[in-house]
Every structure is written in C-alpha cells, then in structure tokens.
Length: 470
Ligand SMILES: *Cc1c(COP(=O)(O)O)cnc(C)c1O
Image 1 (cartoon, helix red, strand yellow):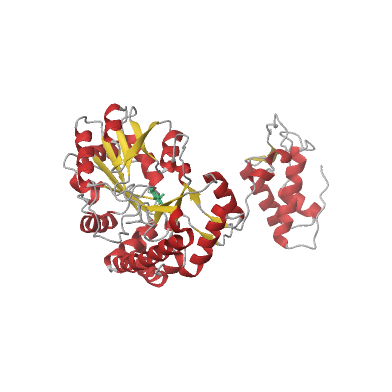
Image 2: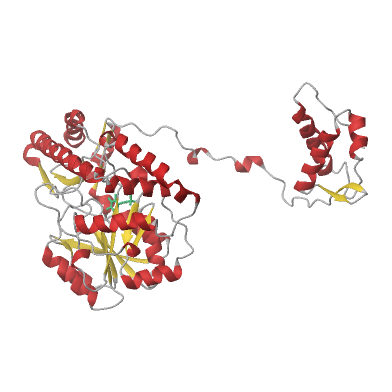
C-alpha cells in the first residue's frame, strides 16, 4: 500500500484533491498495479485521518476519469491503463517566438488604411440603446440557435432597406446574414457548380481570391478598362462567375456606367452557369450624385448574387455582412446548407434591426457622408498643395478611398518602406494585383475614413517625406 502525504494546513476540499492526486500518480507509476484492490473507504479514511467524504470524493473522481473501477459489494480496483507510446513532451508544445503575438496593436502617427471606419463617429449611445431594447424585448431569441440564414424578421428589415436604398429586389428568404463577406463567399462557392472559374477584378480585392483558392476553386483575373471589367476579356476567358465592385471599383474607384452593367448582364444570361457576384462594399457613401442603383436591381434573369456589409458604414468589428441569392441558388442553399449554424451573432442581428427600424442607421449614414465629404475634400486639397502637379487623384467620387499616382524616381515599394519607417500606414496599388504589376508611376490607395482633420496635415507631410524626402 502507498503512504499518503497529507498537508492539513490547506482547506478541506483540498484533502480529497491530495488523495486523488496521489492515488492517480501511484496508478500511473505502477506502484498500484492493474486490478489491485484499493482499501475500503472507511479503512482509508481511518488510516489517513481524513473524513469518509474526502475519500469518497477522491474515489468518485478516479472512477469518473477511468483510473479505478468499482465492483458491487467488493470495492474499488485499479483499471488497466493504456500507456503512452510517445512520452508527452512539453518542449514540443511551446509556441515558438515567430508565432507569438504582441498584445498591443501597432500605433501609427496616421493611417491611410482603406479597410477601416471611424470609430470616434460611431453612434455608440444609440447603438447601445438598441442593443438594450433588443435584449429586453427579444432575449427569447437568444436561447436558441437561429436559422442558418439569420433571423427572419431581421432579414425582413434588411430586404425592405435594400430595396429602398439600393433598388435590390428580393424577399427575406433570399438573404443570408453572415459574419463577413469571406464566410458568405465560402458558402456560396460550396453551392455553386464546382467547375466554376471565378473572375477577380485586376486590380481587385485579393482577400476573396485567397479565400477561393484556399477552398480549391479555380480563379482567374479579369483586367479592367476605363468602365470596369473588360468585356472583351471576359468573352474569351473561361470565367463563369465574375466578382465585381460596380458601385466603386476596388481599388481604382471606377463607377461602372449603365452600358457596361447591361453588357455584363448580357454576358451572364448566355449560359445558365454564368453569374455575377456584386460586391457592394461601400456604396453608402457617394459625394457628388445620388446613389447609383445596384447592378442586382437591373437583373431580370437571376444572374446576380448581391453582397454587402456593415463593416464600412458602421464598424468592421461588428462582423455583419449579407448576401442575396437568386432563386436557383437559394434552392441549392436550402438543399445543401440547411445544417449550418448562423455565423452572425443573434444579438448583433437584433440590434442592427432596431438600429435600421428606428432610422438611426440612415441618420448615421447621412452624418458620415457629410463628414467624409469634408474629410475627402480637405485631404485632396492638402495633397494637391503638398505635391503640386506631381500627383494624379482618381476614383474619388464615392466610397472611402481614392487612388493617388505620384511622379517619383522612387518605386512604390521604396515609398511604402519609407512611409512605414515614418510611422504612416499606407498601402500600394500593387498589392491588389494577382499578376506582377509593373507601372511607370507608383500608386497608392488612400483611405480617409480614419483620418481626422487634425491628423491630416501631418499625414500628408509624412507621405511627401516618404515620396520625396532625403
Ligand atoms: C471591406 C470590404 C468588404 C467587406 O468585408 P467584410 O468581411 O464583409 O467586412 C468586401 N469587399 C471589399 C472590396 C471591401 O473593401
């Protein structure tokens, strides 16, 4: 029998843990052999001077974990324990230095990131009020898993809203809510014909390409002309589903004119496997005109899958995006993906619904459009003042970024490295190409959503320093 070392200076619950631990070690180290009988609970309690309950708790735990088995009216016995074939090695489980993460995020002096929203202008109070009301009135919805496409009533609100603001024609049944455009595209690609070749705009949003490639899908690039995706290229390519950003081409900022939209729809109807995936990621913000209706609103043949997000109009951290499926794909979705759990938080869905229904969302868009318009004008002014005639600005009619091409001896990469060293966050156009990009002039994607007016002068001066400074 083993001898126990009980430390009584600790609390009572700890006594059973000590017994449990020491018995477990004895079993693992084979001091107690398989099928050895353990002392009866009373016996052990008396021997070690602990309570019967402590011994009982230790034995029950050992039984629950499979170290010990009980035989009726005979007592407790040691189980036969399978030995590890490879000794556990803690050193192997260390996360190496290059995979370690820093808990603080990088601080920049200013950011020209095109992938952000302005958190300082987020209407936190009214959002929280909507959240609180949603929690109070509808907490019952939170006790269940919801429909894979999201809550029906939330989709009703969104369907009405999309019709009103984007001309999108759909019933709530066609909407899928999700935690991001990538997650939605992953679902979409799993219900589309597996032979589909996806066309990505060149330049375009590479995160969708990377997602499709990681899913093993065939991907091709589709070059642009001055109206958006090149039709002559599309006609002769193997692309059957083209992902496009007609409202504000990402990143060039081209707004696709009506004729090109119709040409694209004409291309799609010639074959029932052809689709257009319309990524309408920042159409809420347009500065010198009224909103241009979505491409989906022109589609009368079930060829367009419409995707949108609240990442740019509210905050990326909310993770709420959506897609609208044409009927044949909805049929497939219901067939193949009915097992899915919604990836979008129910509370966020309900909060957003109230936020839209109470008019807060439209109010916010109005306020932000005003703010972004001023910011964009100021920034263009600052840039033109600093760079004089050495820059060209394009794609600034809508959205939250534009493209700046600079005449400089320096290449894009060198400029970006210098900007980084100066603490400025900025990205070059070349990262949005699939093919190696060669341009005579470096060009930069300049986002202004997160750039306050106070930071603007310093940001532009720093950019100039990166481009021309010694
Ligand atoms: C921001 C953005 C999206 C939206 O991404 P989410 O994952 O839905 O936040 C989609 N497309 C483009 C081009 C974007 O810039």
